[in-house]
Length: 246
Image (cartoon, rainbow, N blue to C red; front, side):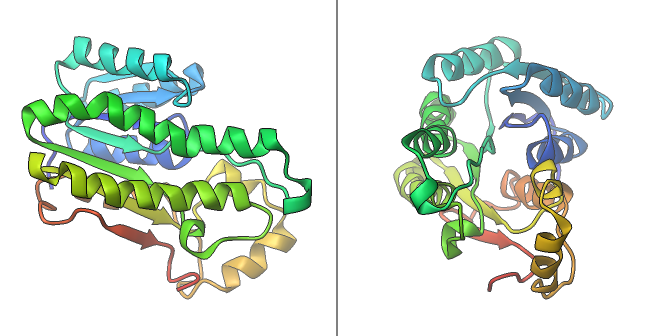
């Protein structure tokens, strides 16, 4: 599974799952555009990508802002001349139960998690269509299928990503563009590390494999879906959750 000289954009790649995916793609010989709303963490991940002998471009961008997304894609084309792979990973959470959920909480999560992939996909797809080849991987969540307590805005955005993935898979298939979604479960990221242990431990005990996942677990599948070894997989929503909530 080699991605020799493929060019990948990974959003939200400054830390956590996005960073894990960016490094796995670099390990598989892709060049990586490291996009994040935090320019400092984007530059740090880009430095790690270069340690694999790959080219990296660190770009600060808010995916909910169309102008910033278009600028990001143009910078990618100026640097590399193409975009072969798009990993839509950028996401946020604003946790609150329904009666405490504000319009601001709802709008911010939907703007980044759902509208963001609309912006990035719409900006990248014309170039993939012209090349008649491309791989798009959207990082949804197990909560997009199961729902969850206190995060209805997050779950709704992640469910929307699954619907968007399947729609784009149908629409873009004739251009040989594969579009798939990954649904992570509990993954060892800064977000998970912020959960108090007395809440976290009972959740871990519900996982059949008995542990949380790693960003590399997500990166492994993302790299496979982005490779030529997965030409007949499109419109899939694949859980990477250790059997949790199956």
